[in-house]
Amino acid sequence: MQAILKKLAKPQKDSRKGDNGKLFIFAGSKKYHGAPALCVLGARRFCDLVYFMPGDDFPGIPQSIRKIPEAIIVDNLQQADAALYGPGLGSAPSIFDGVRVNYTKIVVDGDGLRHLDKSDLKGLLITPHEGEFHYLFGIEGTRQNVAKMAKQYECTILKKGQIDIISDGKTTLESKGGNAGMTKGGTGDVLSGLAAALFTKNEPLVAAYAASQISKAAGDILFKTHSYAFCASDLAETLPLAYKQLIK
Image (tube, rainbow, N blue to C red):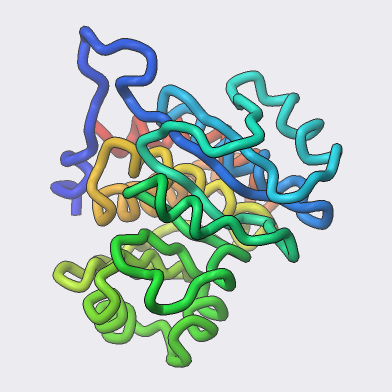
């Protein structure tokens, strides 16, 4: 599996701001105002620019994002290499049709998955947990079923679990590692932000597998010093160290 990680794009020495990935995030609601902040924290070290548009017109969301200096708060769709749609949207209105038209690389996570019809899945990278996978497809998220659904709907699936299953319908991978400290709320938002950032400059299977491995490695690093007593923001802050250990 190290061969997959070696495929990750690396910044060129002569690159400029924006060359190494621009990401647009549509996320958050009055109820889940922390989700977009965690997405940005997961993404900000792995692409050059992060644009954020809140799902709800709620002042608490921009306030949480303004504490992150790398986040660029916007009120419309931006030119970007990839989009992350859905974390923490709750009952916020869907703008998925607009996102679909404007972006070729799209990650859909969390509440955004409930905005999709199966006919929308072609070309997407989706990151469901077991319950969301069952909601979408009506079947258990086994390795065989993940591969089957990815092939049938021509998408890439990162099915989260104790062992993550990643498939584009042609290649199916298992990502092991991590620990029960990663059941904390928000760790999935960190993962989706990381996956979307990597997706800006990588193929979906590579981005999904690398994001899973980096996230799990970060959880294992934290376990050595904190046992189970760490949270999603701790995980986000540990991603660079995990990345450095994995990408040698």
